[in-house]
Length: 66
Image: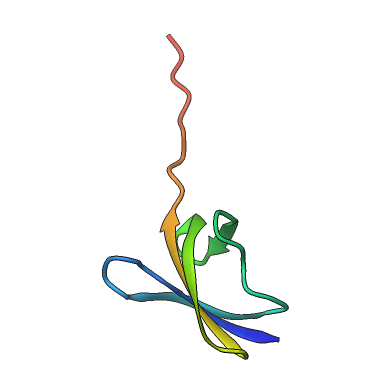
């Protein structure tokens, strides 16, 4: 299991940490506690056994009816 640290790309704030089989791919959608769905923007492999992943929340589209 690889330790993954999810961060905000602008503030470097740590949003969540988890252990996963592998690091998520760029463009992949992940679930972050307190934020919901987030898209992986880029990642930084700190060493072969850990990874920092930068994510941005996915905007939820709302349907408006007339």
